[in-house]
Image: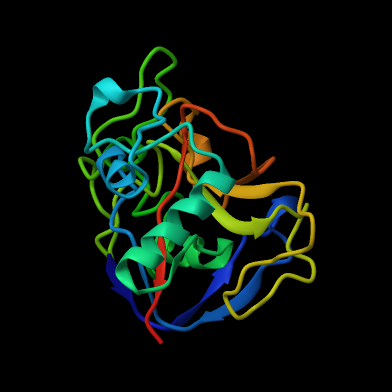
Length: 214
């Protein structure tokens, strides 16, 4: 885990309807996984490995996990450690990705240095091999899409400005961020967001965890 400072940032991008209106979001300090949850970490908590690419090894991100699966993982991890773990909100994820720096991707402008992406016949890669962003976080662009806590809305109209997740009863879609080994580099940009059903699973869907520090 990496402890991130409290702060504010401009979330979204003008001219991209799914990320408008651009707004100032102010967040408290929190800690976030240095990498995605790996197959080894998942196995240690859950006792099984659902990943399609198990041959990649225990240091590769777990995948083929749904949003619902991720909720069970953080519940068990919290019970085992006595600390409260959860999925990041969209705002926390983008704040961590940007790390107070400009750039299209999570750590700069060069997708080749930062991300595994666009490999139609490939697979995941061991976490942490690509260049980290300014806060020491790896693979926020590429490798696997990362589930967040938020319900999927078509834009940021009415979205919270305190860093909390946007929730509703019976949410039909949850947000993923960051792109993957399979998707093109444009999907690894800091502002890109997609929604899928919470029980959807794929070989390029994973997640990382957050822990409150206040």
